[in-house]
Image (cartoon, rainbow, N blue to C red; front, side, top):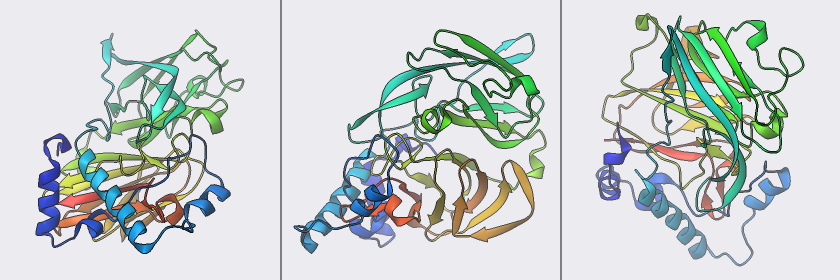
Length: 345
């Protein structure tokens, strides 16, 4: 469902219908400005320590203010759940052009951070193809400071296309271009990201979703909508799809809708994603369907992992959705970072 069509008034009306007060509706608040580098344990401790001068009234007010910002922001970021990169067909090959550059990235609230980006966005645009497609990705390095390379994480590619400098290819230096070609064999949820100075380049934004649709869709569970959540803990702090709460966007679903969520962890830390009120049917890991799907409410996603789940929107309301390492999501100032919501109407 297109969140652009949902107004703040509609969202608040829904929360009221569900019998949820504004403070409980999204369980959120104002957070300190997100750091531009990977948070440290000291940052975590500071984030969870109440300010000595904060009274309960102050704390409640900050939480409520964050919820209001979240509501005000609904529909203002239509690309939050992914901008699809369209290919051009060249002699039967789907060709994509990806440009690496240094940018200033706003993870929310106007606190600009030094980032690296594919085609000017963090995450980079979604590349989506179909099983068996011949794929060509032309990568140009417009970054001034560093060389790079691209690894198609989770894809079975020819060795020369694996994207590891000095192992399978030379690095792509400033001003240079490298072309990757392979056939999309591994169906499901994969990623593309840098494999050169990766701890910096990936966490600063050189990452994106690479999705291969199955030809025989009957082999997957049925679903009505499809969302990708890329988890990161570098540029902009703790983020979902490059944004931190209250600048994330909700998933808005109709009653009974079956939602496919693709989790991708491109960060340096584990992130257990917890959904209130609606169970998650886990059916695929790292692109492969599980022999026995299972239900959970909290799913741990380690760096590099991809998990696919189905959520059935069976109960109306506004359901909080967040990383359950709590100092990735909440402080005395309210919720921040890896927090959003699923809204069932």
